[in-house]
Length: 464
Image (tube, rainbow, N blue to C red; front, top):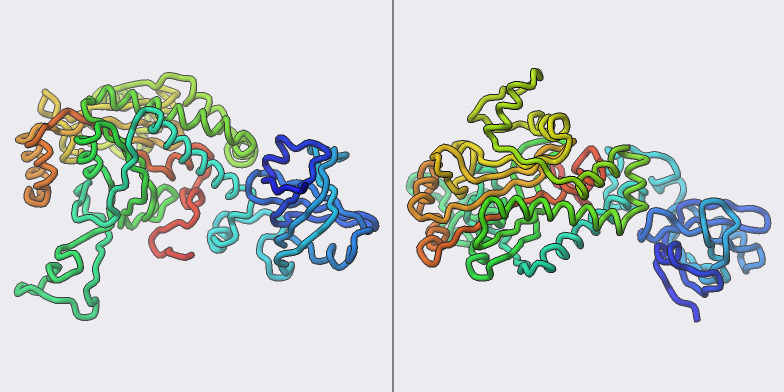
């Protein structure tokens, strides 16, 4: 009986004598007078499977000519021990079926190196390259590890709304969602756009975070997490920013800042260990081709305890560093990427969790500390990338939360339901947010965040 198996299974566990069917796309082909050697890849692994078929097959010559790079093909045959180097087995094909040809004159992915900038212009094909293929498999493993981590700890996965009326961060960098006639929108007597006549009866946005909704669910289910798309209308054309990206946001009732930091550290350790175990070939590829520190960084994350500093201690260390930073260092100013990387790479030489930031530079929902100046916030800073996780203990006291909302110029009425959580059975709770693409970028060593998501969205770019 001939069975179909993914190439990754064949390479790892295939046994000579197995009768197999293989489907995929041609990477390379080498033809001799009596044999053709084809490397076929189905996306399941970095390496392809070598398939050999002989001139004894019917239509050998026309078939061999059609098997160009990019051609979709199906082989049936017997697995045999390979005579070549760096491969354990190969398929001796008895039948060849071509599903779709690829013209060598127009197919843009020939056997040569292509720049990542070029590959972004052919997003519909770039998944067939070694690098992007490896990225997507690691991305998949990261997502699986995230769900495994929380599910094993009894967390409930919740789906928070993509369309919302709340600005969680208070930063104003939101995409408006509207069904109004943009050529002739309704107006108020003051000539402002009348969003009361819009689809939702008010102004609505694409979400920047599911945190506030996660807090709702945590007050009913104790431990929850979100994992979904978020959006920022931030006009940043950098290698670190996307307009659409995925966020992971756990929220825990009966939890303080210490518990929040402990969970964040265990979370990162679990993901890195899982990916290194499940995607060893892909991680080795990134080590060899992209960033020679990838595996050492992973080992450090998995096996070393994270350092911990308060914001005040971090500022003192930066001031004593004798480094010439581009951005100023002073108590009350936010840490910039260069400061974060100094702390993680040079001073601590490992990931570091910085806590207790000035209240003035943090969001309204963070719990005010007893000193009246700082909040129970924390950031996990990693070598090479800076902040990778941001979180806090939330302000569970009604009066304090009202003061913080008002102080940041936000309307109390817009957060009536959020304040209700403090009126009815309030409880200390905490959580954090992880930018999923930032995690994949950090893990793989990829320089540009647009190369770790299948279809990047950035200013001026919404292709595919």
